[in-house]
Length: 92
Image (cartoon, rainbow, N blue to C red):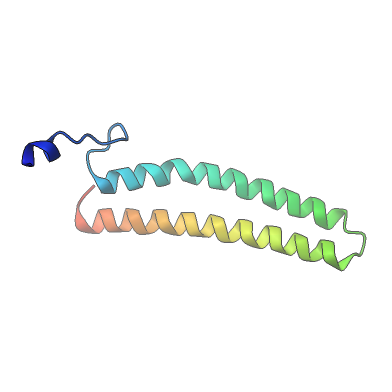
């Protein structure tokens, strides 16, 4: 049975263990989330510019910008937590 587990290879290249895999995933996700957040903030700016005094468009603007910022903060916080954990435990 131990021979079976010795043959399992990491699905992500250059990632020998789970903390490295998590760090690689977060390193790849951060630019994507940043790009999506910028697009949603620009979309929110378009909504506010085209609102024309309609309260429903203002609420859509607030929602788009709020969730873009929340998503960005969640990914940045996750990366900071993983980096802090790896530095503290000496796994990096």
